[in-house]
Length: 204
Image (tube, rainbow, N blue to C red):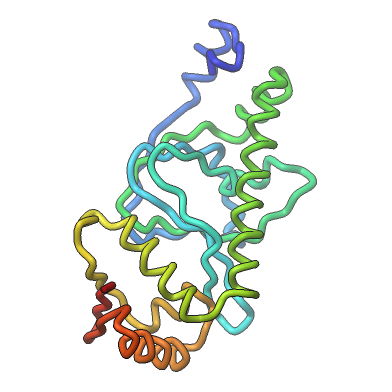
C-alpha cells in the first residue's frame, strides 16, 4: 500500500483489517454462494477460475499462482460488472485477504488503488478472452496438450512428465466430452506425443 502513496496512518488502519486464511486442495467458492471475500493475494498455492455450462461441464478460464492477486473473488466490489465465475484451490493454499469494504474505501480515497483494481480486472478479462478464443479456434488435440503442459507447470514435481489425471478431468477442464478426449489421447499417443495409462498421462 505504501507504493500507492497511502499515508502511514491509513496503512496502519488497513493493515489491521488484513487477515490470512488457509484453504485445502479442491476447496471451491461458488458464485451463487454470494461470497465476497475481498482482494486476495496468494501467499502460497494456486487456484483456478472456471465456469460451468448448463449441462454441468466445467471450462477453465485461467490459473492464478503464488504472488498473484485474485479480484474475481471480490467481484461484488465492482458495481457495474457481474462475474458468474467459480473458484477452486487446486493446491493447499495460503492467502492474504483485504476485505471488500476496506478495499472499496482504499480505492475511493486513492486513485492509484482504483487504477490497480481496473488494471487487474482488465488483465483477467484478457486471459478469459484468450481462453475462449482457444476454445473456439484451436483443435482439441492442441488444447489437450496445452492443458497437460499447464498442469505440469503447476505440479510440485516439475521435473516429471507424468500427470495423474483422468480423461474425465481433462474433459471437464476443456468443456468437452470424455469420449472425444479419449479418442484424441489415443491419436496423440499414435503420434508419439503422449503415453497413457489408467489415470495417468505422460508427455513425451
